[in-house]
Each structure stands twice: as structure tokens, then as C-alpha cells.
Image (cartoon, rainbow, N blue to C red; front, side, top):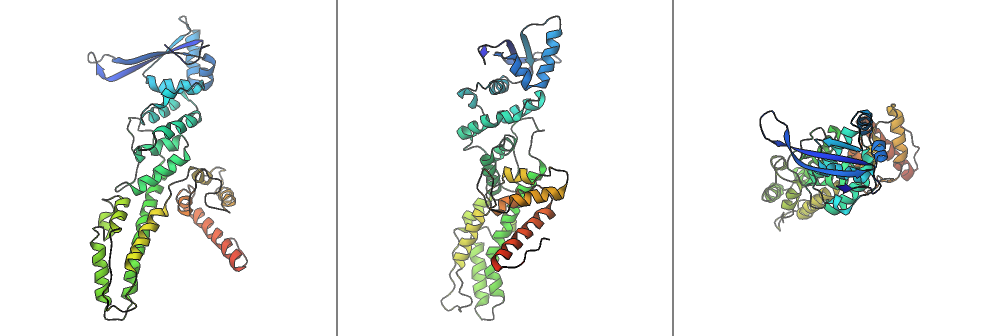
Length: 366
């Protein structure tokens, strides 16, 4: 028996089944693990309407005892939930693998437990075990348990360190627990934006050479494109779906090209510097998605115009004003969960205000 609270008045028996093993066809699975927990009945019933109803029915039956059995649930999962409910969390509860985060979410739904009570527990778990985890595994837990730094880092990591479509991974069979599709869409939109930024920066020398009137422009243009091709990541389109963004940027760091001495002043550009700047700007562009920006920009009032102006008031200052994490404009942009036209209008008005302050113009709202 495990004592969750010394003055407990309810013995909660948890039986965990092994569904992969059955003694005979059609028979129930065998018991994999079972544990008895001494708990407070009041705290359990106050925390779960479902358990409250089950215990009431159990108490009113002819076999009423201060013992109640729960079957089909994981012992470890119920152990953590009971500790959290009773505010009796032990250090051992944090020694659990990442897949437990989906199990905890599933029990929250099954028993109507308040998932916000797990926020502090997950914060400690993340501080102990978050580093080194597959970022795709951390997307859902850090979102579900409201861990702003974990979500920011995980969303940035899947953008820069995943191949092809950036998405989450679920190591359990609880497939109903996943990120809202809009979030996955925004993660991939951010990744697509990186390609646009990188490609535009690398193509600028080409645009300059194409309008040149000198005799050396063709040789210089060929030399630049050949040097890019030698990195094995140019052109970008064929390699982008097959490589991590970070690996593409690493390959570009090996770029070097110096035009011939006889090249004219128009064609002598700092080609290596151009590529270095493109790599650096692409690396630092996206900080990840911000849970606080996402929450503020989600429709809340039922009136999209009211939602827009409320968000507008919050964004007069820095892009991460009022957020738990530091970030730049791209994170705010891709974290916007409202309608696209409202986000674009907000950006337009904010830039007009800055222009008006700088030049002394009259500001007129769109």
C-alpha cells in the first residue's frame, strides 16, 4: 500500500491491465500491475466529478466499503495525479518518461481532472528531463501543460532541426491528444518563411550582376553560382524537403568565392560576406511560437473586431511585452491565432504609428 496522505479515509485500488497478453481467446487480459493508495475521499471527489459520482454510487450500494477499485488505468499515471491532487508530490514522481505526459492528459479527460493542476509538476519535470528530448515529443506536453519556454524551444527546434514537414510525435496510442492543426500550420509557415528569407538573400548578388553592363559579369555570375552549387545545398528547392534547415545553413558556412583580380568595381561584391549574413539572419530569425501571444490573439469575445482592438492595445510596445519568454516580431507574427487579415491590419497600423512618430506625420487608422 502507498500512503498519499496519512489521514486518508479511502483505499483506492488501481489495477493496470496488460492488453497484449490474454490467457485464452475471449478472456480478460492479465493484471500487469496493481497498487493500493490511501487517499482523502474529500479531495478525490472535489477534484473529479466522475470519481465523485462513482464513489457515491459505490457508497449507496449494498457492498459499500471504504475501498474503491479502478481498473484499466496505469498505476504510475494515477499515482502522479493523486500526489498532485493531494499536494503531496514526491521527487520520485518526476522519474517518468515522456510518454507519461499523454497518459496524464488522457486521465484528465477521463475523470474530468483540472489539467492546470499539473502545470507546476510539469515545469519541474521539464527542468529535470526536458533537455535532450526529441522536440517533436515535447510539442504537445509543453502546449497542454502551458510551459512557455518549453513550447518556444520545441517549436523552434522542429523548424530548424526537422526534415520536410515539421510536426509532432506521439509515443502512445492516445491519438486524440495532439496540437490544434492551426499551430502545426503556423510552425510550417515559419519554416517556409526561412526558405524565402535565405533564398532572397542568396539571390541578391545575382540580381546585381544581371543588370551589369561590363564584360566580366557572365564570368562573375558563373563563379558565384558555381561556388553556391559546391556547397551541395544550391539550389535550395531540391534539398529543402530532404535536409534539416540547420544542416543547410551549416553547409552554406563552407561557401567561399573571390572574383578574379581583373573584375570591375561593379562585380566585385563581398560574396562570402553576403552568404555569411544570409546564414546568420536565417538562424536568428525565428525564436519559436509564444503561448502568451497565441492566447491573447485567440478569439474570445465573439466579436472579431473587439478581439482585434484588445490585441492591438497589448502590442503597442515590444513584441514580447507581457510574455513569459523573450522573442521578436516573427514569433509574434506566427503566433497570431486570429484571422490573417486582422493580423496584417494590426501590423500596418503599428508601422504607420511608428512612421508618424518618426516623421511627425498625422496618424490615420485603417
